[in-house]
Image 1 (tube, rainbow, N blue to C red):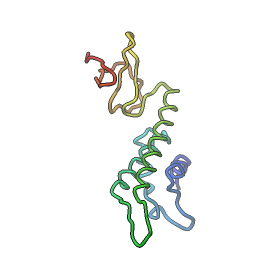
Image 2: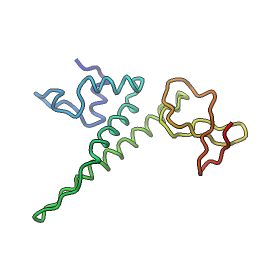
Image 3: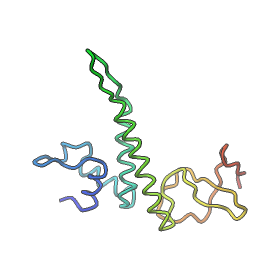
Image 4: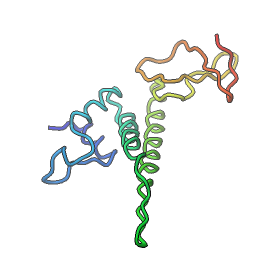
Length: 145
């Protein structure tokens, strides 16, 4: 039996099990849904962002088809999945900022005492950031420490 967070995650990523159906009728199995939650420390919005990103990665190979006056814009699947991944990543960031826990890669993680802004690349974890090594970018010209 699926837990409440698993059912909620399925709703957020548009993967509810159909009536009289099984998990095999969806994009993600129950084990994959559980793994999404575990990898994201049971934060449903972060798991939804990852789920939509996985779907977008699968859809990126689809192309638009035109034949006999009919058009199927399959590339829309990728664009919409990507937009949903971005939406839930933003929601996960907002939820985690309340706890002081940065969770999504590439977000501003800290502002140093001298007001230099620092980006942390690829940081996803439950502990607050106490020390960072600045990652120089064109946008934020911060020297490495």
